[in-house]
Amino acid sequence: MDEMKLTSKEKFSIEIHRMCLDENLNIVDAITEFCKRNGVDMEEVLPLMDKGMKEDVRVTAIKNRYVRGMKINELDI
Image (cartoon, rainbow, N blue to C red; front, side, top):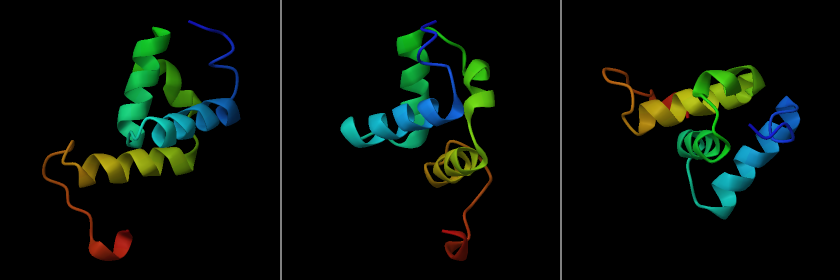
């Protein structure tokens, strides 16, 4: 694992959002790709995710039907 990649919530957030913009990925795909590229497990990046990022992941997962049986209320978006 590259220690520079996993040093702070702020650096992690910046990297994930950069990947979203530069590579046209949604946040779930960007985090997954980050983990693959850096050889880390998803559980290792959970502590680096702030509340806003966790909510973005939740909304994206529901919107893209990564989670079965859940729907987003139109007013929640």
